Length: 341
Image 1: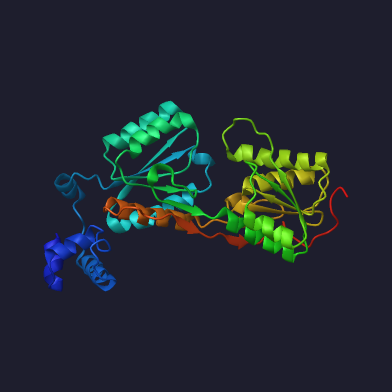
Image 2 (image 1 turned 90 degrees about the vertical axis):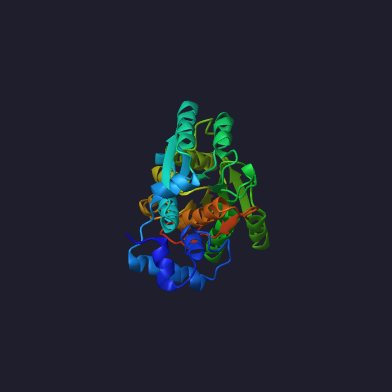
């Protein structure tokens, strides 16, 4: 069986250099990229396989990363996130322990499991329900972590997020080019980003914020869809003079399209609709949805790299802001007459 000493001997370099690089500390110890790639290539050529059990005994590490997410079936980011994260972890001979929860009892159970397995670090997603805070803090205490999904200083950890202001900007610019000047936006919280406000103001347009009251239900795919239906009903009730609707996410946009069709409106002939996420549902609506697609896998890989740097002792790591990409479907078209004028 090939050992680290065999790799060092084959390359005529020190064992400590090979060991550091194969443990993912090459960047931290400032070895050149060429040296790191040379060591990894020789390891692959010689068929090196790390003995994780032996390493764990020596180092006290588990070589596991915990991933904590609520309501996993309702979170569109998860498949891409896990793929991107796994692509990074496998390079460092790490595995992941995914834990999902839908109640305080389940969360406490999952946290205890991760603590018992002594995970080396944690990836978390936002969950602003206060009843979960105690358990999450217990898991994160003195443990390297990275977050995915928002621009935040929460927990003092680095976060990876897709910029919502950039999503608004690319969808608005697309709609403005199609001649739209009168917009509504269906949102979860009453907040409009300054970039969008400035774009609309400079174009001489108008903007209406629509915030459907969805109670205290969790923001599931079903409730997001229903928010779109309810939001379109509010637009009709308020007789908003618009030609385009921007939705907070793709499921809400799908709800808008369904509600519009039920009332006899045609998309995009009567109004254009756009979303944000690039979820699978964006390809299943009729017509297919124009949306600002998040780079889900890149979010996962960026979080993985941040977490590995934190595990290796780096401090004060910055947040990573990623940009969405406009995915043009059939739900956006040239502006027609305003609704309810």
